Length: 102
Image 1: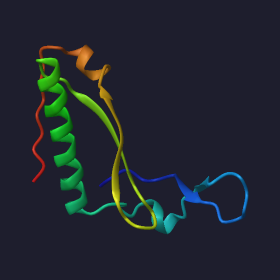
Image 2 (image 1 turned 30 degrees about the vertical axis):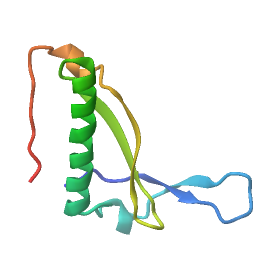
Image 3 (image 1 turned 135 degrees about the horizontal axis):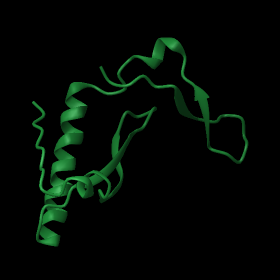
Image 4 (image 1 turned 90 degrees about the vertical axis):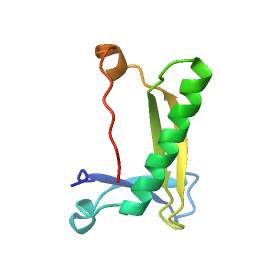
């Protein structure tokens, strides 16, 4: 299963200058997946395209650390940041693990 969510970020509606706040996730929501299988496939597809783009640009395989978000109101998915991954790829430079999402 996908990890239990301990906190959630929600929009504030109290008129304060802060637009979001972090709350403890209610138990009923904490273990519930926050995205569908189809959304996981969409995110995976985007990640492959981003990694392929930067690998081609750099002339070698470039693993990427990619952050995504899902809007809690509209349900839209977003890539919010992508940067070269530097921790795992440096640990075992001769090992490439490929995963296929089906």
